Length: 362
Figure (spheres, rainbow, N blue to C red):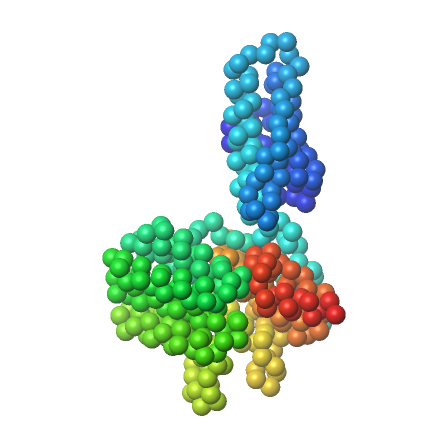
């Protein structure tokens, strides 16, 4: 009995069954009418964002037939479990996707393009879009990396992130990885740790981590050459260092960020991370430093189309918050606020998105 659950604002769910049974309801409750001798099976459940879990409130089976067979009850229980299963799978994705399926229309004054959607989360666990974790890396290590990434974006205290990053680097060192994969993992972990310190305005602690990320990325290039992946993992921390270090470093290395992204796109025109780097370079700085907010939004609209099949949570966040920032720089507050709220659905505790959204409400 396959179950398909469709996301809708009134929490409607449809159960695809050989007898075309329908589950329906409102608010956080579902009512299922099963067209069999059992007739009605009521399930009251809700999804708690705070607890990130499905809460089972109550259930009740009403049998109108006088023949209350054990087999019918067993079938009803199996049906209920399948429904709960499908509902739970939908509820896990709902915070990131259900409320933001229809972005506001882009004003004609900005450009002749629209955002088809707000993007979607990928069910895959990937290191980068289209790049799987090394096969030799344990499931626990992958889980630790993803937890570290999400906590960085949710602005967990950097001291905590620092300790966890150091611990994860030790795990990677001891794992039976190839030199290229080990350097790649080291580069991503160090980048996340540096980003955490930088997000908390601690330049002194951020710089060494970003330097470590750059060093590891260059090791990947020495081993594997300038692939789109190696160029991106080099460009991201180098871009952060270009902002944090002195003017001389900026002048020497700043232009390389766009060059690395362009080179990555030469061999992989749909590389989402490279496209985001190019768009961000237009969305964030003032015009005197190359900012072009309308062009940035047009680029982001193209990236959204690439993300409709699903991307990692951090990538989708960077996309949404970049769009929000470009709209904010154009003084289009309502559009910016919508996209910042969409970003916060992914990482509710992100300080940048929260503070920028608060500014827009003043």
